[in-house]
View 1 (cartoon, rainbow, N blue to C red):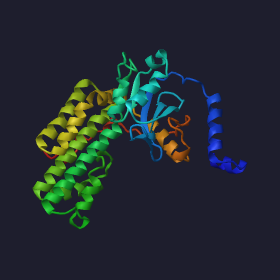
View 2: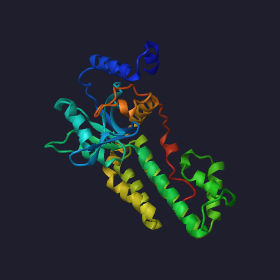
View 3: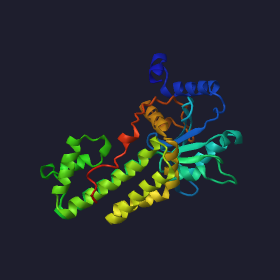
Length: 333
């Protein structure tokens, strides 16, 4: 678009307006029905504020967050993008679709965002998507587990040593290895990390190892999405994670377990369906790589035209490779 403006000797906003008008004529007024819908936010430059003369209150004229809606079951890619990351912005886009379109949405994949959850479940007077099942993407669950493990390691290192960890004392080995999945680590990488943890003082190494095992228990639970197991298997692995958290007494794991309990229906939906919003993340990547319209050229409420999501490569492993149920470094062993 920028190159087109240079070739024709016009400004960038003129080319953008011409492209937007052309897209409105070519694209259908309503997207085709979708079975799996992805919702995700994307940052679109700095915000802009205006001062209301009557109230003398600053209000947002241009929001730096946009919300995108992506077809995860078909080939339509980005269905629409609205300015803002609020319940009103999301439900407003839903209300622009007719009832027949909303009723055909079977699954909605989101990250762990309460705003999107409330928007899908909004009842005015009926749910915006009456037959949709919310699914939480497992990437964000793993991210929270690794964050809890890192917080445990940093807090205990400062308490015991009075400083941050250093590679010279072996801290660098387990600091790098702990966030990694045990099923993806070679023995030559896993063994030194565990040896370093055992070599630490008991009040430092044992809690970190317990937090690492709890993280691995949670990964084992999420890995069941690949094999669609019986509910008893899911319950067994969920109990193993909760039991590990309860025995550890670590506040970071308590916060993680509370989050898992709060979002468990959506996490269970992922385990049963293996539905992710990787397509939404891919669309965000495509949007972020395109030249952004400066905030001063973006009118209030203006969104972006639909974009084609980048193809994604999904690497799947067998259930035997996914599970770490037989790992030899369980802290209780």
